[in-house]
Amino acid sequence: MRFYKYQGTGNDFVIVDNRAVNHSALSQQRIHQICDRRFGIGADGFMLLNNKPGYDFEMVYYNADGREGSMCGNGGRCIVQFAHDIGIDRNNFKFLAVDGDHLADITDGLVSLKMMDVTGISQFDTHSVLNTGSPHYVKKVTGLAEMDVYTEGRNIRYNDEFNEKGINVNFVEELGKGSLKVRTYERGVEDETFSCGTGVTAAALVFYQQETGRNSIDIEVLGGKLNVSYNRNADGSYDDIWLKGPAVKVFEGNVGF
Ligand SMILES: N[C@@H](CCC[C@H](N)C(=O)O)C(=O)O
Image 1 (cartoon, rainbow, N blue to C red):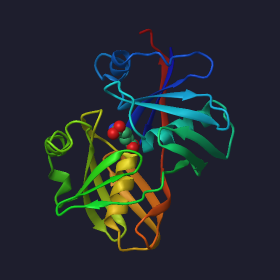
Image 2: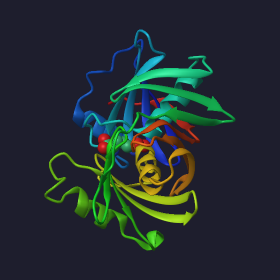
Image 3: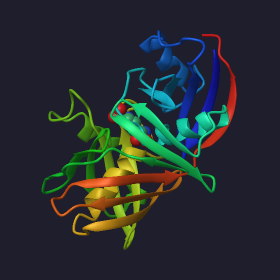
Image 4: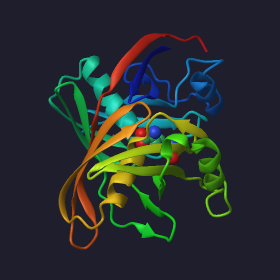
């Protein structure tokens, strides 16, 4: 099986072009093995690029545990760069993912992905919960650089409330006005990753809830820098949400299992 390895701010993926040869029957165990960093290629997730009438392609996303995941923002940006690299020659892409239609473009070497509209944020004393294509728990913290994100994120992800379905846990510190640092414990990888696109999107929306209108937030993650821009409506809903950042091919090869 021919595969391509991509990364977007250190969130890394194995991608397979599934248009001519059909790899849709790969088992959960096999995808988990492909993503294993010791026994396989190593990645946070696995994606198939499928043909889809009416779209440039369809993205099917699996977490590193081999289960089909909800939307992956960095995966979406990487598969757009992959589509461009294999000759799907567009300035503006339109593709289908598990959470619906997405638009995307590549400008000045950066991939921008339009995220789904967000209708509401559930606010609690210590944290917020929202869905940006994947479910996210967002907690404001200080001293993020020193935090044990793995242990604290895992405790939340496996508590009685979230244990069954799981949740992605984001810890967020404000670096300055319109500038955040985010670290994420990801469901399905069950570890801290270097970046989470739907997670930084959630963090941006949670942090600037007072700012109605157009906002642009710069976000630092372990693997680099992202930008989230969006429109906040007076009723508290969000639309025209764009996630922008690098998406880069790392290597390609063949895998026999
Ligand atoms: N890394 C992703 C999020 C992937 C989905 C997630 N792990 C889940 O299924 O909950 C991103 O960049 O958004």
